[in-house]
Structures are given as C-alpha cells and as structure tokens.
Length: 534
Image (tube, rainbow, N blue to C red; front, side):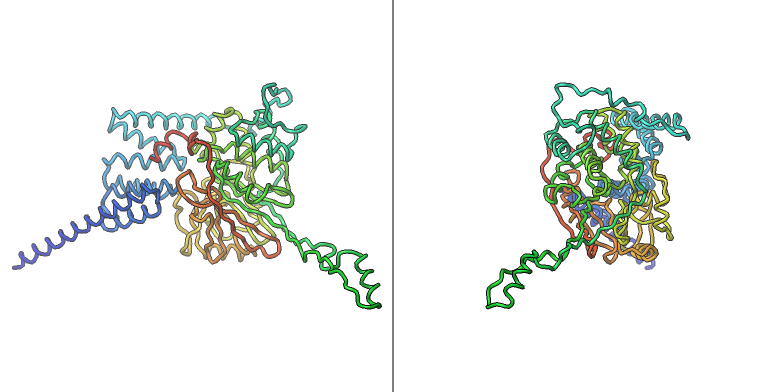
C-alpha cells in the first residue's frame, strides 16, 4: 500500500513537471514572437516566466541573453549566458552570447576565450573561425596600444598637423570656414551639405576639431550656468512719454477717448533646451532644430552625451554639434556620454565611420577632443544634468565633481564612471548594474544626494524610453532620450526638455523619427558586434 502511494505521488509529480515544461514552452514561443516583433521588454518578461517554470533550461537563458543584448543590458546578458553554460557546457550558442556580452563590455580577452572554445569544438565552422580571428586581432591591437603607451604626456595629433598648408582643391564646392572661423552661414551650409550626403573638406573638419579641443580644455568638469529672469526696463508701463502727455492734457477738459496704452510683457525668462542621446541620427537632429529653432544666444541648447555610435551619420552629428559649440560657446553646451570613449567607438561604429570617411589620424584627434568634454552641468544651482546617473557610494558632493580629472578614458569605477554609466531603479538601495558597469541607484539614493547638495532634481539620458522621456523617483530623476526609432527598430519617440529660469519646471516635447538615406545603423560597427547581435 505504501509503495502504491509513493508510486502515485511520484507519477503526480512527473505529471506536474511535464505540465510545467509544456507551459514553459508556450511562454518561450510567446517570447520568441515578441522578439521577432522587436518587443524586447515583453520577450524578456516571457522568457523569465518560462524560466520560473523550468529553471534548468539552457535555451531559455540563451534566448533571454540575446534579448538583454538588444536592450543593452550587457551585464544581465553576460549573467544569462554564463548560467546557460553552467547548465549545458555543450550549448554552443551560449559561448557566442557570452562572447558578445564581453565584447560589448570591452572584455576582449574573455570574449576570445569563448571563441577559442567554439573553434575547438567546431574546427570546421568558418563563422566561428572568422569571429575568433577578428577578436584575436582586437586583443593584439590592444596589447600593442598598451605597449607603446607612456605615462608621459602623449604627443597630440594637433602637433603633427600643418593646417595652413593643407590645400582645398579647386573642385571642392562645399562650405568653408570664414577666415578660419565658424559663422552661422557656414553652419547652415554645412548642415545642408551633410543633408545631401556630401563630405566636409578634411581641412575644415580639422579646423573645427582643433578649435573645439582648445575651447573644451578650458572648461571645468562641472559646468555651472544661471538662467535669469529678464525684466524689460519699462515693464508694466505705458508705451511712450507722448502717451502720458496726452493723458495729462485731456484730463482737465471734456471727455475725449484716449487710445489704450501698449503694455510691455511682464517678464521674459531665459530658457534652455536639453536633449538626450542622438547616436548618429543626423536627420533626427535636423528635425529637432526644425521643431525647436536653430541654436542662438536666445535659444540655448544642452546635448547630454552619446552623440555618436550606432547611427551611421555620427560624423555629421558631431561636426554639427562641435560647430555650434564654437559659434555659441556660452549658449551651446555638450556633456560627455559613455559612447564618447575609445572602447565604445571601436565596437559601435564611430571609429569605423571616421576611418571610412576620413582617416585614422582624424579618429585619434576625435578621441583627444572627447576626453575634454565636461561631465556634468548644474543649472541655477538646483538641477544637475549628467549622461548616466548617480554614484556607487553616498557622500559625493558637487565639489568632488569639480575636481575630477576628466582628460582620460573613463576608469572602471568611481564618480567619473558613474556619471557616464549608472542607471536608476525603482526599488530603494543600489544593485548590480544591468549593463555590467557602475551601478543602479534607487529613490532613496537620489533623495540623499539631492538633500546633501541642495538640489531639486537630476536630468539624465543613457536609456531608450518609449515616450522619449521618463519621470521617476517621485519627480526627482528625469530621463530624456532624443534618438527616435533608435537603431531603426525600437519604435520609440524622441523628446527634449525646456527649462525656464523662473521655476525650472521641466516641459517635455516629443517628436517622431524622420526618414533618412538608406544607410543602416551599425554600418560601420565592428563586424563581431553586428553578427553577435543577430
């Protein structure tokens, strides 16, 4: 009897497990369909539910890893690929996923190790061999760069350029700087030139880079500006002295209708437009200027990092932004993002794009310039803007940001890393970053930082948002993202923010993507990243 009961219980358990596996497969198929529709968030949700029913399925972890890769959650993607291989060390896709995650994080040696494993298991796999060779090439290049690097001041590309004797050929009909200076006419001509998919002459590009490097190198790591309330000198008064005389003249005589005085507006408040990531989407950048007006002294802008990579018109974006910085040094602001760094540029397209359109030397100069971009901006002492977010530890003060030595590639940890890489999370406290770099910070972390530094709220970018922006942490953490239909696949809106000096209340403006020439995103990206994301 006891054996019969045990057998019955065992059979019931097996039936439940079989039912759970069946339901897990249904959820996997649902997730796969979401993935095909590029609805990666729901794909992740259903893969997660499938894993709750069957946590020992390597394929589910591998699939969720790829979905995390598509949403740039490289830390989570790496963890899932690793778990996949713990369950089934012979599941080859797991090695590919882990290698891609490590590549995205700049961990090239770790990626190479996984590609070695694939080649060893599949010696006749041409695709695996090609990926191994490409990754090995990067590892050797990095080793060479380290070998020739010196602690001494490296010689700048600027020192080797002879701009004065760089000739502009007679057949070149594009825009030229006027007496070596950027003007509004030049900017309009350059944007039109780029719009028609034409190149700026290399001499003009070098002139912009050299001048903007000098300008940025003089700025602090934390830029501080004040938006003022500008009152007209005759606020609330009648329009002219003659009108006053007319009133006095008729006041003692019979009634005569007096024209109504013209009142000046009570006040004019300075406004700034804050834009998030643009990621090489030049035609969407032009659309922002079309919707919101060209930059000017009375229409200032702040672009919050990640100007380049992924989109295949990154050169056009960054030269346009640098040009406006030179034209309007006190009304046009640029902050560094995590993609204004060598590792990201090598993987996600900007390095390849500059080399394809100009030269390796020019990319090296871009790298030098990016290192001088400020890291944060404080508006009216109340709003702090940075690309990524807040810090892995409490106690960071604005003065700590002022003291950051930013002229370098960002470190793997510390305030500079956090400003470029961190993300908010809904729950209190801190957690491991979904990206594998820096951290995620909760509402309590935001609250303490704001209180300690007497700030009202922070504005950051760094994450795609369906509506182009998101307000979290009880209104104290705002995300803005300005690359609509990111990478031609996310179907998100773009947004920008207006802040006025009178109350610093954010006003959100949304926009949708505009058509662009038939050049796909990631066209210049490292081939391993292009294939690894497939």
